[in-house]
Length: 314
Image (cartoon, rainbow, N blue to C red):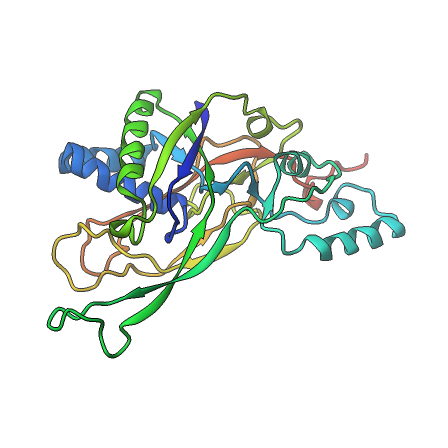
C-alpha cells in the first residue's frame, strides 16, 4: 500500500464540494468514456471485492479535517479542576473550527496536548448570479429566471490517495488530469471546477504512523460495510445526490438519500484496515446499474480507552 498526496491547483471557482464519493463517481464516468462499459463493470466488481485505491475528500491548502474526539483533558488523565476549566474555555473558542493544521492534527490523533494555531479562512465563498434563458424569446425567463449559486474559491486543495494496487496509479493520474481539464462538478460548462493536478513527493509520516494506535480516523465521506467497526466517535450527514449528466433516459436525476459518515470520524480497531466503507447499490430509483462508491481513506489514531479496555486489578 502506498499513500500519496496530490495538489489540485484550481483555476476557477468550485460549485460542487470535493467529496470523495463524488470524485469516485466522476472517475467512474471517465473510465466509461475512455475505456468503455466493460472496463467500468470490471472496475466496479473489483471495488466490491477490494478497491484498487481509496481517496480522501479534498481539503483546502495544507489543512486536514477536525477529528471528532472527546476532550483530551477528560480522556487522557489530566483532569484537575483548573485543567478542566481551561479546556472548557478553549473548547468554546475552537468549537466552530472545521479544519486543523498538520501540527494540530498530528497532536490530536496522538493524544498529545494541542498547541492551537491560527489557521485563518482557507476558502472564500460568494454568491454569483446566473440566468435561465427562454428558448423561445432568447431572453431571461420572466419568472425565476435569475438566481444565485454559491461558489467556493481556494487556490489549492489537497487530496490523499492510498493505492492498494499500484498498477492503477498511472491510470488514476491520467483520469484525474482529464477531469481537471474539463472541470469538476456543477457549472463546468461555464468554466467552473477547472484545475491542474500535481503529485507531491513527501514523507507522510504525520498521517501514516501513530504510536500506540488503537483505532483509525476516516478522511472521506463514506458508508460503513457490515465488517467495519461501529465503536467510536463519529458524525453523519444525509446526502441528496444526483446521477451523472451522461446517464441515458429517465426523468428522475436524483438519487435516494444516503446517510454518510463524515471526515474526521474515529473508530476503534486493533489494526488499521486498508480502507473503510463499501459499494452502495440501488441508489437510483430508475437505473439499477448506478452505484455509489462510498469508501473512506483511513489513518491510525490513538483513541481514549473504553471502560471495558481498562486492565483489571488482580
